[in-house]
Length: 296
Image (cartoon, rainbow, N blue to C red; front, side, top):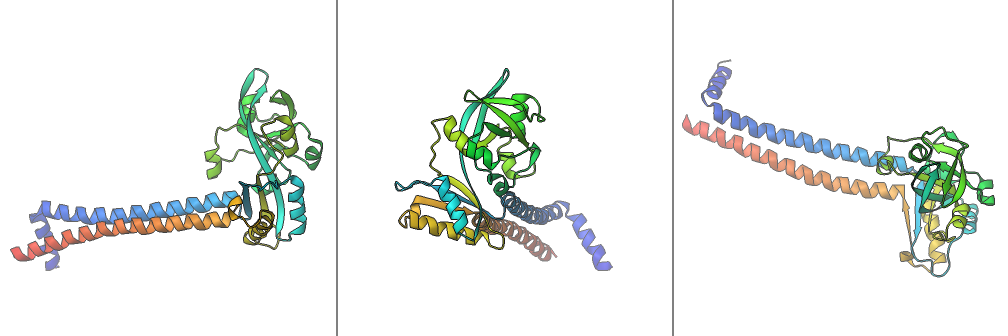
């Protein structure tokens, strides 16, 4: 008890010295806590973003078809031949002016096949998604996101209404549910989007080729995303004469591993900075202790 009282008296007798010492400790501890929290938050954000993309999603991009372009029939053949591939869908896009009455705005129009809905994990708020019959018959139907429905038509309950894309009337058969929870939705917030059959978009504008350069696939039930990605890599290596630079196959697992590597590096870096703060604070405390002992 006597030692405690003496310590309090010593602190009171050297208020400035004591305050500076405590400040060093507080700054060091706060820096460590804040930096650890930042790294933890970044890791959770990355995990959530990857989950939003789907745990069995593989994205394939072809940059050089070697004079042997991919078509929709090729995708269907690969899906039937490879047991590790569950669903597969092509996607192409362009920007067109969308109109409804006096309202008009630029719309990003995606040409997709029906399986795109399940692969991407989309959700409808009303209506239906694109059907195989729409793709086969090149039907002029579209599914809007909530932003496009609101900006062009004025409300989201617009199934049965008509929008004009590139001078052609499309019937709205569905509206996508607004998703404000995912990182991807934050990046595309405010973007007007319309989904139409892949075959319809090819016929609608000359700016889109029938050659498939981007497509998505999911792993079959009982298989893994890595197995599906490896199967597709094997197919494309054979098709493009073993030229790895002709295409790129990215899976959600690969993205997660890359982002985890980045956050791990960030953790080490920030941990080092926090450690330096603690060392500086500790040196300050040791210095004050030595001065106090010397004075006594």
